[in-house]
Length: 407
Ligand code: HEC
Image 1 (cartoon, rainbow, N blue to C red):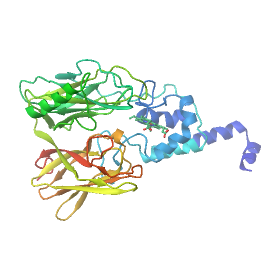
Image 2 (image 1 turned 45 degrees about the vertical axis):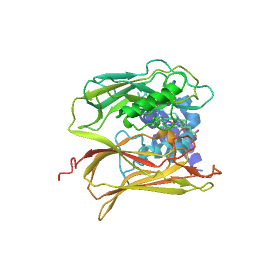
Image 3 (image 1 turned 90 degrees about the vertical axis):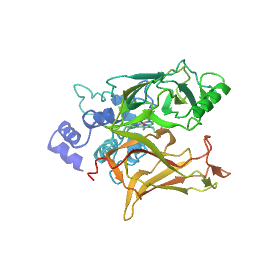
């Protein structure tokens, strides 16, 4: 009825233009949101399953784009960044307004609108300004065709004459479409290096198979997903790399796009010293026992701190059954939320650094509550390194003392 009135009053073309101006269009609102938040992965050769760079690619997917952004499964990020718990540096997280825009656009039939003179460019990837050390796989490695997910560890020797601190890193992936993520670990003791060497020796081909971690005691140095080019560690902090000590580069390969030889390298910027040496502290529950057939089994780990610390970042870690995790700090009179994971995906775990580092005082108890869905299992699941085992760990990037707390 309204439409007929409008037609009677003027031309159909005017009426159409008015509708366009009211609702979002691809060229005006949608393309810039996708360029900023999606195209780093959803482009030709990217890790996303399809490109989202032109109207013809995006319009048929309008409804699923609205759905995945509405439930916040895309862009992928494990932690809640809404501010209800914390906000993180470089979080992959859409603003509520952008989610509403994508939903409104899908609902109104995904109009193209007037094409912009220059389509929006995704942001330039970050680059390392100075390379002091390169740790590279010594030879290409081709993953086993029989497995979809491969974890392979390579022992690399930084040949440092003196202790140094890693303060920034850049990743140079050999085969971006095949690398799921990588982690570089420091080995601090000769016996751990010997154990890693024995694992390498016992496994044919370059490196050794290592699910979850390097299978020897080790310390986190660098972690990156397939679309991370690299980053700075929090300003004023760095992670020690010991003179003469070795490192282990763990590659997680996923062969959904095919199998290729990979030779990845990590470039590091080092500092001879840093104002605040960072450590990785962990809170864990290693005695976990998860009965089968339950949709929500909760395990809890706690650790009381006996000194003052500053928390710069957090990495919630579980395996494939993990669904939620809550990380809190309980003081004498209060409880603070340190991380909230509502929809855990093993594939998207990473260190997330707080936008504001958090001082925690001696006497505070760090607590993690890990929730698992065991409906897919018919036997009890216990702690372990294997794909089918589970873990419940909160890793914390910390420095000693209360940095920036003003006291
Ligand atoms: C860090 C890389 C990355 C970013 C950023 C990213 N995606 Fe994805 N996306 C993927 C990968 C990988 C998959 C396939 C595996 C999966 O679903 O986890 C995927 C799957 C999808 C799917 C299909 C989901 C399904 O259930 O079939 C849609 C739709 C999608 N992404 C939309 C988006 C949108 C919209 C954005 C931006 C708001 C975005 N993605 C940002 C990597 C990414």
